[in-house]
Image 1: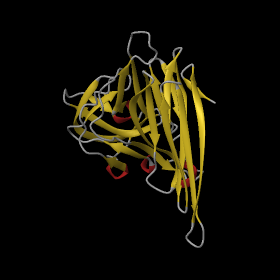
Image 2: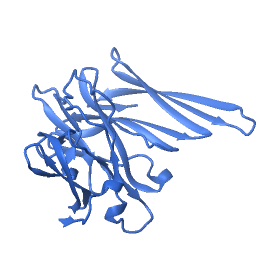
Image 3: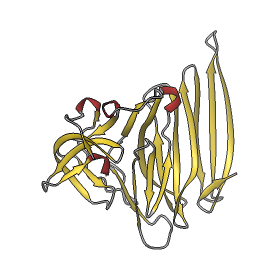
Length: 256
C-alpha cells in the first residue's frame, strides 16, 4: 500500500447521494448510476494523480466487493494506491476505514443459473482499467468503450439487472460522454461461469452514427438486433443503411 499525501478530490467525478441499490429481480434502481475509472493513455506510466475515478460523499451507500455488505459513507479520507488501484480512503458510519477501490454501487442478487439458489453479482473496475463483472465465484473482464477515440485507459460503466425469457442477466453499458464508440452488453451465468450473452455496439462520431437496438421474441427465444448506420455527406444529405440479424439463445449465449 502506498498512501498519497493528499485527497484526490481534483481527480474525482462526484455523484449525488445514492439510495441503497436493492437490485434483486423485480426491483429497479432509482436512477442511473455511472462508475468511472480512467487515465490518459500516452504510452507512459500512469501517475496516481492522473487517474480519474468516481468519488463518494457522506451519506452515499455502497457495497463492499469482497462480501457485498452495505456501508454508508461518513467521511472522505486521503488518497492511496493499493494493489494498483488508485482511490480514496473513506470512513463508514461505524467508524471503520474502507478503501474506495473495494466499493461499488452495483450489487445484484438473482438466481442467474436457475438452480433455485440466488447468486450475488457485482460490477466494478480492476487495476488494469478493465470492467470487472463478478457473478458467484466467476469473473468476467471487459474493456470499456472509448479507449481509442479518447486516448485513455479505462472509461465508465453502468449496470442493470434485466430478465430475458425468464433468465436474469446483467446489462453492462459503457457510454463515453464524447464522440466515441459505445456498447451495451448482456452478461449471463451458466455452468458456474459468467459469459457475454449478447453484444450491442454503437458509434457516435458525427457525421457518422451507428445505433443498435434489440427486440427479444419470447416465443422463438431469439434476439432480433437492428443496426442503423447513418452518415451525412458534404451537401447535408443523410445516407441511412439498416441491417437486421437474428440470434438464438443457446446455453445462455445468443448465437446466429
